[in-house]
Structures are given as C-alpha cells and as structure tokens.
Image (tube, rainbow, N blue to C red; front, top):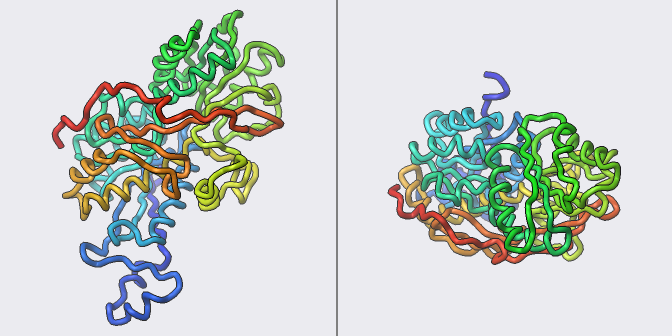
Length: 434
C-alpha cells in the first residue's frame, strides 16, 4: 500500500481506551484521578468513526495539511471532554489526491471497508461534486468544509451538508457593497476555471451590479496552470479593481507575476485570501500588495480585541500571532478556511447527541437532527463568530472579514453582518426521502 492510499487512524483521548474501560469496581477511585476521561457504557464502548477525506496530495495539499491539524486539535478537545454520547471519537484519514474520481472512491472505501459512521472534511468543490453521488447512494452523511455553492444550490442530495463554513454566494454578497464603495466600480475578475471559481463568476457580478458596480472582464484560469503572464494582458485598461481568487501550489507565482506585470502601478486589488493561503505575505516580490485588500473567513493575524474563544482555538491548533505554526514561522496556515473543520466537528457532535446516535442505523436521524439546527452562538465551539443555519439548503451563514495589507500584515478593517450574506434559498433538501 503506497502513501497515497494508506489510511491513518487518530484516536486522541486523555487516557487510552483500555484504561478508560477498566472494571467498574475501580471506577469510583479512578473517576477522581487527574486526566481521567469517563466514557459512558450505556450504548457502546466502540469509538465513533469519522472518515476524513483529506487533500494530502494534489493542488489542495496545503489546505489538507492544515485541515488535518485543525481536525486533530478539535478531536483531542472533544475526547478530553468525554467524546460524543460518552464514546471516544476516532478519525480515519484517506487521501483523495484533490481528485474528483478518487474522492468518490474514498467515500465508498469509508463506507464499505472502514465502516465509518460519517464522512467529513472535503474542501475543493470539484471533489465534493464528484463524491456527493456516492454519499447519497450509500446513505452516508457527508459533512463538507468547502465554501462552494454546490450544496446550497440543491444540486447535491440530502446526505450532503455544509454547516460549518459559509459559501461563495454569501461571501460575494457580503463584500460587494464594500468593494464598490471603497475600492472601485469597474471590476476585472480572475478566478480558477472550475466549480469554485465559477461560483465567484456567477455571483459576484450580480452582487456588484446591485451596488452600482460592473464586472467588465472575466478571466478564467485552469487550476493546474503554473504561469499566468499570458492571461494578464487580457485585463482591460479601464479596470478600477482586479478581483482575484486563485488556488493551488502556484498562488505565489500568480501574485508575483501580477505585481511584475504592473510594476507597482495599475488597478487596485481586492483578493480572496485563497490567492495567498499558506503563503507568507512578506515573501520577496509581494511588496506591491501593500495597501491592497483581502477577504478572510477568519483572520490570519491575531487582531486587537480578539475574543478569548478565538485565542483558545489558535492555541489548540498551534498558531502564532502571525497565523503560522508555533513550531515553524515559515509554515503559514490556511486560517481563513480551516476553522470550518473545528466548527463542523462540533456541529456533528451536537447533532449526534440530539439524535441519540448509536450507529449507522441512525444516519437518517443524524441528518434530520442537523437540519433542525438553526443558530450557533459564538463561543469555544464557534470561535469564528455566531452563525445561523438553514436546514432546507444545508448551508450555514456567518460574518466575513475584509482586511488590508499594512506593514506586512493583514489588519481587519470591516466585518460584515450575517444578514449581509443571506439570500433567498433555491432548494429544500428536507423534501427528499432519506
């Protein structure tokens, strides 16, 4: 078995399962011991198994690495507090290669080989779209941390949910008024040529038009492209704002070539932080970004006035004040997205507890329990901020951050409201049979 397909198992508890399950005769004394975690035996002592569909390789590898790190931190905290329904939680990881076909194979493997209770974690939208049919056919709850509008659009199935991170349509609606009022009205969009980029293409233009803005050019770029100089001359000369959202290992090349093309002048820039996720903003060649703005789901840099919940989350995940690993200042996180793993896992926990989840026979009840949720208050389980959930479209809505590059760091200058991103739902998954 090669590294690409080799699964890994992560069971993180305050003590071992064996120690936690020792004879009841010693329970009274053991229950008072420091670090002891009591797992209730009323239903099952077996762990709840969550299949983590991870982008360990392919264009999503940087995200996948930090999604794994955030997942490990959240599961440790959940297990240290007693697990879910008194049972420890085990994460079983498979690499999908950031590939749609491989993603479907991984979902099937979780169901048929690993016998996981659910599948969780996927980011890249083409992988979600490719994997969703398998989840539906297998009646496997599939909790994604993806951002794409594909879930809320109604094009997936009832077993696919996105309760822990906002979608692109809501993000575009939230930031468009600020861009047109503060940056410019004639906008050229540069985006990756697949589902995630198409969401930006389809939803930002109308949102900007509502505010008196206009998208005068759209430039799609293949997600595997390694150089971008041949695309940049397509930017119209009367562009006020370049709206850029790029992903993958070549993002540093993209922003460098954009700076070289304009030589320090040119239109103003508004980027989605995807163009710089896992990239040090102080990398040589990025000086031209000073004064430009970015969307961030959760701020990379610790902001003045950050809540104690956010600080605790960052400490648990191992982030320094600059959003890099506490163990390696050059290891920059994907902070704007990975919080969604933490929050999704806590939503799964709450839904399983509401459903009285015991095993695969309760998967339908788990979906219904998730659909019944409506509000997630800001707190230790939701450090990014308060959110509302629409069970009909399986999508959560929350606040967005707009940050400016100042002296080599990102400082938040505007935070949108939840309502800024709300839109009229176009689907209702609850009408579908389970």
